[in-house]
Image (tube, rainbow, N blue to C red; front, side, top):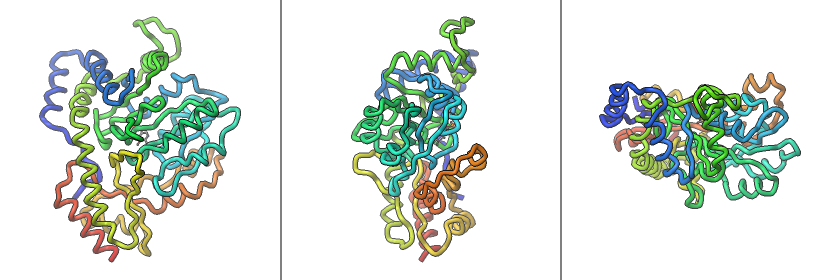
Length: 361
Ligand SMILES: *Cc1c(COP(=O)(O)O)cnc(C)c1O
């Protein structure tokens, strides 16, 4: 079976974690500080704050910007549910804008239509590893005095016009095992704003700057030194991982382009797409779900990100969401992700192409 995702953990990662275990200092400590500094440098921001998941990064970023009850946050429904659930955690209301048909990323025109006096922030998601249209989004944010919180949980190392994602607004990253780099579970907030970084650091640890002195309400969302040790090694390897993903994607596109009924990923000229996912549209007579199950039965793993847009999830329907967001809804029916991860061999890539050819031609 060729899996849809596979973390690459080597001896160096194992030794780095073992060293922390042997040291006895296993909770948040020196390694977390070093990982934060290295990640800030990688992203090109002045600060980074480590937490224990991407969801926590989004939650803490929103709270650090003082977003809560009475506020609205515009985001995309074509994402993992954590993006908008983090808004719900704060008591604010997620408002959904539709996506662009070619990139699957939030449509700036649709954002503008949803701005009102309660709107406080925009959360663009850099879906599948490709940056949203940050030029337009920055202009909108400036015109309407809105905060930008980037959901870069799928886009470590992606860039827009040469600038890394996570450095346009307040950035949030996930280090879940399927992502471009991993710490097991983990997350990071990136920012150039010292105050936001300070507040985020407090919120992740019961609102304290100094142990047992609590200035604001916070949580325990800290990263462990074991996770940070793993992250330090993975971060060194990230550029190599991303190169492999990009090369794999290029190979797949060259071959799959020739098959009728498959639409290969669109790469925006201004973007460095790091292919967290390689996602095609199935526009064939054979339904997408059938294509997926045949691929699976022939040993090719697949993923559907995402089969139900967030505004159509039972949780959101129960809250009264009734939006019609046609581009997102159509995408949810057609998308199919194929393995593109750096652990794939040339033979694996070939197998994916041949198998798809057999099914669709
Ligand atoms: C993975 C992911 C998250 C959440 O990250 P976790 O580490 O799983 O909490 C949020 N948004 C997007 C787009 C993701 O892909």
